[in-house]
Image (cartoon, rainbow, N blue to C red):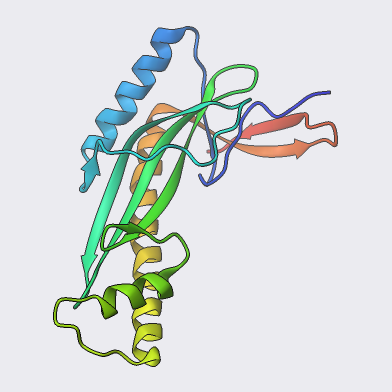
Amino acid sequence: MATSNFHNVNATHIFACSLENEWDYEDLKDNVLYGLEKIEGYTSHTKSDPHELRSFPSQSIGAVSRVTAFPNFTLEVIVTAVARSGYYEGCNLDWHVSYEIDGYDCEDYYEERVEWALQNSLNEDEYTPADVKAYAMLAENTAERLKNEIVKEIEQVFKDYSDPLGVTAQFSNGETIYHKIA
């Protein structure tokens, strides 16, 4: 039984990297890190890959973070670049995103975190459920916009150090045929 060589979760393409030896891997990580450091909001504080699999071990390389301040809470979007080992050979570059409101992870629970932040704000204003819903929608839309901006910049760095691939065909036994993306 065969399997796909690459485990890609979020990236728009499979950013494949061929590696001859362990030094190639270290060079790749250093080069990607160098590219990430040039992006506004770069941080060396990374989060571990929630999509890591036993057959596809991964390592976080660096992250880019953007913060937006609302009247009574802050929203932070963190996109972490990941190098994920190929099943047979090489590796691919991918990313994952996390969201924080006032420093607390929120993932997809914007409304609950926004409600908590508003009710625990310094001036302790009272907010109606409609206000909370409106702020949550605003936070979610802002988070999506910031994520898209960061991903575009990170994937440009990936293109500089990899070969973007697409899936041509995948068979029922898992075998996969790839094609180059121009």
